[in-house]
Image 1 (cartoon, rainbow, N blue to C red):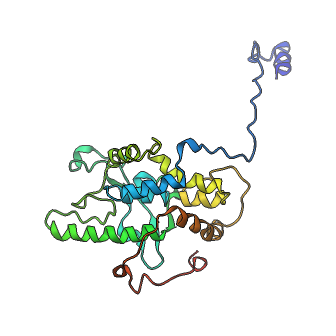
Image 2 (spheres, rainbow, N blue to C red):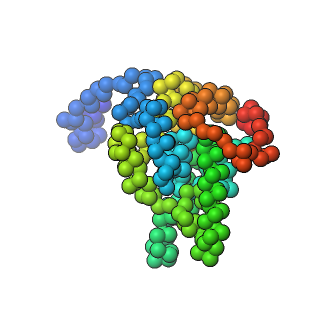
Length: 280
């Protein structure tokens, strides 16, 4: 470039060379290819996960913890999950909304505390996904539904029947900060590492990757637009997910504590088993 510019100046094509005094950029050291950087300081072990799940049962954020750790949902996605999103036959969950603030709206146009709890689109097109529900989470959803129905019958005139799974005793959706004080208290009282709420979502992902699960499948489960790790993985995404469902389920079963299922929870519909291969 310098030679060309000096030639142009010499031939009086340009008065001054714009490359004069400009040095070549320094070489940037290339990062290793196909490597995994897993920060275990920001995640929990399987034993710590069990402690957190057990301890959260007596708190208002138990369902939020389950959706975060065992299904990898984002905080605002968790608040936007409804009972109508659950396929009770196939035991799957459709993630199709989150709660937040719509662009172009004004706070004064909404009731108190409702401005930041509007139903908005998800983060990316890849965030719209259908996830298999682990048995432990499925039973917890059924129990939470019983509580929802009791509160609706008791507070008929005041109850806000919006169908949210994570809601107050009056049916109102949770704010994005609601979990904070309960979560921090759980960590402190049970001797768990003081990690962020978002790191719970990363915990499940990290443990799967450390156990050499398919990065493409983990990426799709988390709703990421791209693979979590740069890898040469090609092929149909639906097939990749289907191939990994049977591998991921034993891991989920190992993480979750054992729970006896009451006979009253068993119905004809719940006993129907549909093959993962047929579903995908």
